[in-house]
Length: 146
Image (cartoon, rainbow, N blue to C red):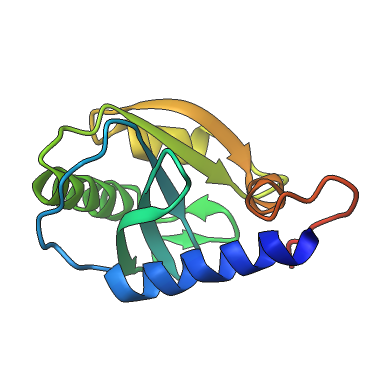
C-alpha cells in the first residue's frame, strides 16, 4: 500500500515536469485546488483537480526568500501575481482561494501576506513537512526538512 502512495506521488511529479510553465488553455474541472510555495530557490504554483492530479504548474527561479524569510517582498509578490494570472489565463477562471505552506520555525504570516497580496484568500496554511507527509500519506513516520 505504501508503494502505491509513492508511485502516485512520482506520477504527479512526472506530470508536473511535463506541464510546468505550459500556458496552453485547459478545460477547468469543477473542483480545483491551488497551492503556492515560496521556496528559497523558486516560487511554485500548482493546480490539482479533485483527484489530486496536477493540471497546471508554474515555476519561477527566484532569489526572494532566504531561510524562510522574504528578503524581496515586492519581487515575491510580483511573481505570485504573475503565476496566478497565468493560472487564470490557462484555466479561464479567476483564482480566489489558495493554499500555501511555510518553513517550520518561521512565521506563517510571511507566506500568507505575499500570497494575499495577489488578491486571493489563503484558505489553508500548513508547514512544509506536514504538507509533504500529507502528499505521501505518511501516518506513522516523519518528514525531516533539511
